[in-house]
Length: 405
Image 1 (cartoon, rainbow, N blue to C red):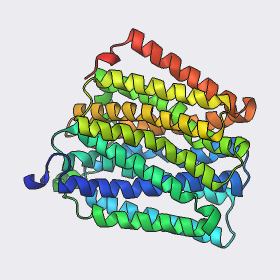
Image 2: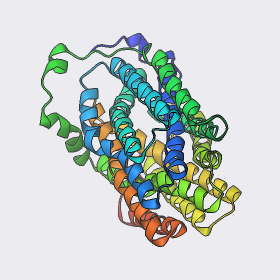
Image 3: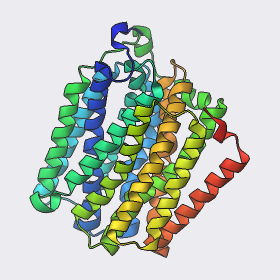
């Protein structure tokens, strides 16, 4: 593979800033979509808790099916060209959903179809974006990951707040805005340095062994294997709670509405942004294993705080704390994967990182919706918090994860 050495620099280089712009576009649109999708299912279609969980499972399910394939492809192709095309496809999909809502044709099956389509695009974008970080940054990986995570969560937060406009201007206009944000991301992405793969590598048929290469490398590494297993708990507990429980809380306890859904979805990234800004200034995290465990444990406790039926401002503060814990956990786990992945299998190894979270998230969303429908929303939060706390305590006491650096 070839790359212009002048374009491979440390964080804050021009290439890195363009990378962040493209990342911010995708996750800004995704944050907007998270709230709009929840609002359309919960409010517009008045779906039950079980159907909310099923709908969220549909948007996550393609990750389980295609992330490893996306990682293998990311190691073989021009990532810039692929990401531009994926942005365009997602933009047109959002415009199509806007038309369905505008003409009154929205239905639960059509929304499920849209979810499967967008989830499929996401499963190819994520490994390509993650692998692309090493194309634009050669040193200071922990700081680079902090900046990436800050922009990712900041984009999601701004997008979530933007979705709150749906009550004022209507869903079609907000979905049209999402389409434009995705289009804007192509402008920054197409200016990134291109990493061309050798012709024989990019044209050779994709073999099953290539799909397994990332998983084999992860399972053979003590560090990567442990982080992957912890990420599984994130997909089962935190992703399901974020996508299913938060909109149900708003509907059942806080009067409903896209604005309140947007606020709760937006304040979680606030804690993450503050912490990642501190990590960026400080120069990274040294004791990554301990930060991962303490961050994930604190997020679990904040999740439990929501189970007490707090007033809306208290729920917002608890969600900010959830974001604080998530910031430490995500930065530490992501940096460990970036630093321990081999160059040849980088995209495939990083797709395993995402698969551990997003591949288990469909089951998490389905389980969370089922529990909320059977035992109640607050009770489900308490169950999730207790399970996460027990897991973190056991990992602290009986494994070497806390010693990872």
